[in-house]
Image 1 (tube, protein in one colour):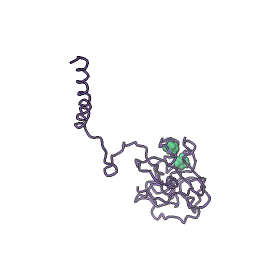
Image 2 (cartoon, rainbow, N blue to C red):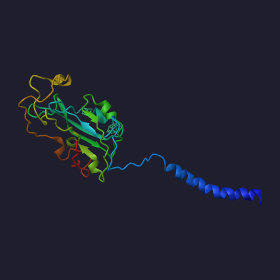
Image 3 (cartoon, protein in one colour):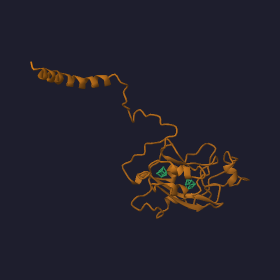
Image 4 (tube, rainbow, N blue to C red):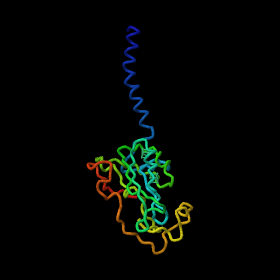
Length: 213
Ligand code: SF4
Ligand code: SF4
């Protein structure tokens, strides 16, 4: 047999076998397949997931409606409208609160610049990552959806400031729970439910979806 022809025959046999060798080796490697969503992996502790608007220990909101988060956002995903608190209808300890707050998750890239910009630590990010939806409108999360749930020591807003305390006492951590007898005030001007306020347009109403916390 011609030596060149013999070499070709040997290679013609070896090449497919070499291909199977790759498959054979992979059979003994650790499997990387994840059984999502049946089995969910725990995210890294500082994973950037869905946002949360935090409360003070008595339930008043930390957001002061300053819009710094919206200005910091490179994707223009945040819309904020601030308003004045009154003694009859108080949402935060200070002068202003976030009357309308929306985050558009069709735009958000979860970069975290907004939470860095927030001066009151009102805005933080959770580890929740299941944000996909089939509707653009449902990807606009409203203040009601983003607001943190109530602990046992909290009363839902609006309600009066802790007696004898001022705004700076809240930020010094002197208010640790709602004062005895604190009750929720009647809300006359809650922002998200008012029509014609949103700049996202009439065809994209704020989502009604309620997110579990
Ligand atoms: S995480 Fe980034 S993109 Fe998303 S709202 Fe905040 S600043 Fe904007
Ligand atoms: S979340 Fe923070 S930065 Fe954004 S409007 Fe509220 S207080 Fe200002």
